[in-house]
Image (cartoon, rainbow, N blue to C red; front, side, top):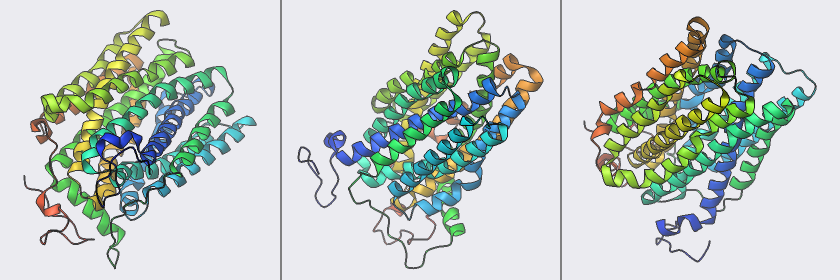
Length: 449
């Protein structure tokens, strides 16, 4: 452990001033950056390969995207109940190893020219399954590595690296699909997942795993504990509902968007990648703002306005016409605004969730919110394909962009809008050591309204 930062006695954890000098935190940071770069590249490579090389229609693209998203709906709650009792870094390493293998095998098949829609569906489904394990474990990992007063700063740093991946991943994915062969494009994702494994495996600090009861609760009961926690806490319940509305609308929009850019605006694969990557620089700005704005204006006001401005930016896209020289700069501006607003919301929401959730329920809380939110994405993707097929790309994009504004509306009408400058505290009945706290393996008492 480095000697250039102080340590809280008996905690083994660095104080906030030394967080970025903590070697283990940096390894998690580097690994997450590589994983996110591979993920964002793959999210562009596989759909664009289907659109530009295989020439799939809107309905089939909607199905392809839905197949990659349905594992969230099928597995998230079970994975959340399972992850809480295991080392999150082990889960992340195994998940990224699996994603590297799947993409490597797909690249090998593509090398012999045998990649078709069915092959891509198998690949995106397998990657989606492993992504569920990684994402749930990742959201529970930071709270086991640092103290609660470091969560906002730690989340801001990690979300900043994710933003950098949002810049490089789509741009790299679009360029590879446009300029190089399919095997090289697909294999690039495998390389970044392998790099992530190498970084996360080097974390040395012993992970704090919440103590298990002598008799482990059945999976169904542990899932119900996570559901009761989220439904019983006003902050978590509001986060869950806003996430569901956003993910449904965004999935529908992105299905139409991926068709609109090359077919209606006639952008090349590289230009599509740049347009999608534009949210990255905005998200980098959002990561910086997320650490300062809530302390000045309050979490509630920041959540409402950041979501409204960021999500509303997409309303400009259906009006774009003309040559790429005109439309591409406008798309970059839209992505910049969307990325900045979305990142402010992401960091604030994650800090709120972590601050009101006991350590032993972090994985299940993250999994429940992910299940309800991301579980809506397959339906959104299918709806986007239907709208594009029946109403046309421009009208479909306008409808789905308008639907994005439902998320800030939900936040504005929820208790989240009334949050002040301080994060909500962990309710007394959930604090460890209290005689009236629920025993391990039992459901926590719902928070008061």
